[in-house]
Length: 296
Image (cartoon, rainbow, N blue to C red):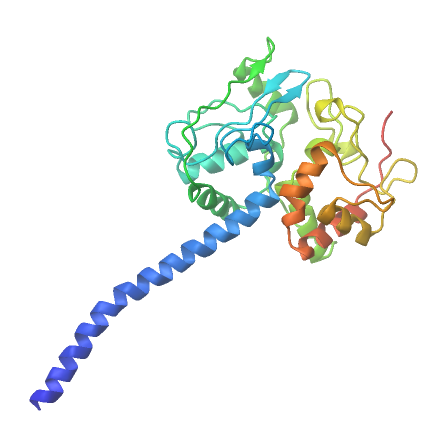
């Protein structure tokens, strides 16, 4: 009897000792899964391409190279978890508001050089995962370079009016008339990869022309021509689905040329690291777009 009680006591002690550890392991595994998923979403979102200055061999996510625009020069900030120079002091709500509403934790408006106009479509669980990944990175104590914006565009309060005119604060909603693959491609292209920010023409105030979505523009980033991604007969994209997939993977065109300039960076750091299924989904979405000819 005494030996049996001793065994029961030993098993009870073991159970109490193991249970908390098991819970910790489960929680750690859940955190690891969240961070891994966030890392993939951050890659799909192209964050590292803008927020890292590759030309100066800058540290990842510690601030990007200059982005020249007709309104001035923008410098993507430090988004590492440094509490002084990065986003280390941000709450989940702060991060979501930045990505969805284009506002910093103090309520000041971001300029739309930061593509919150596309990121606003991202689902909240995905935003939480993206923040978890960014907060898992090494903190870099480097101050962000201030923007150099011409007057009067440097007045942030003017963004209130700009948003009223041009900002569509809405989440991604699947199109029930389209396949799951096309909807996945639409989410990736329009919310995360924000393809429309470059491939859609803008008005003189920088607002996106949603009626000409993905129709290309002669006045893209850095003054470069950006191609039409719709299947328009004259000026649209004539590539097959597999050809689009290969381009997103390797940068090689059907003409055996290779992507250059900004798109080369996008492929190297973003679409080239997506899963093949996601590249196929993006291609399916692009093939489903309404044909719109490029305005010359």
